[in-house]
Length: 301
Picture 1: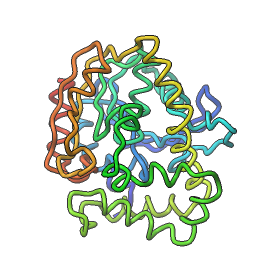
Picture 2 (picture 1 turned 60 degrees about the vertical axis):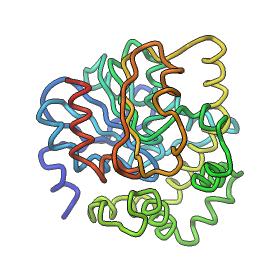
Picture 3 (picture 1 turned 120 degrees about the horizontal axis):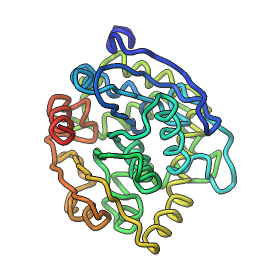
């Protein structure tokens, strides 16, 4: 089944926004705006299982983050700022503004959730409500790193190595690496059945592009450098999340074992923080689409 069939009446577009970056996205549905941000190593097509249901109540905007999918992959800089969460957040605020949405609710998964966290801090007047899927704050995660995290999420340290080491190693067999990461993070490590074949084909198409692999590595290099500087500056200034936040995580994702998910987020927020774990691995919207959509609807209700 082609991707277009999965998304039905959703329109695909590629638009240059005020940041100078062209962002690819799908849009459709009826009701108040809802921005959906994907994670690594995916693209906006990860929302295919939840989009039809959510589109009955919301106007969905589902972009590819800069560097991913069919969005632009701008040149990097020594400080990795072009791939910081701040830069990614600015793209998405500019995209929503260009679509006539000055204020909106948003859902983010993985790197998209980290982008949303930064967006809610930098643009508190834009984000009405935030739903964060399967992450803890970047700074808190690095500060709590132990051997268990380093072994399970080793890519946080592999992808941050100086170019072109990870890029060249991944280029040896990019599809093997992609599938290994995706199936290893799902609730069933030996199964690929949670991923729609058309979506997996899209992930593979994008992953074959060396420019996307380099951009992905730059995203992680920024996460270990300039993003931490931004987070520490917020902490020093007492800047915290002000909008209502709902957190969901995969109870089968071993990286969160022993973590106080809600307590950690509440320590970063002035507004209310709610949430719960779902019986899944990392890919909540694909492993548990009905429960994920239901939680989103209930929180935004």
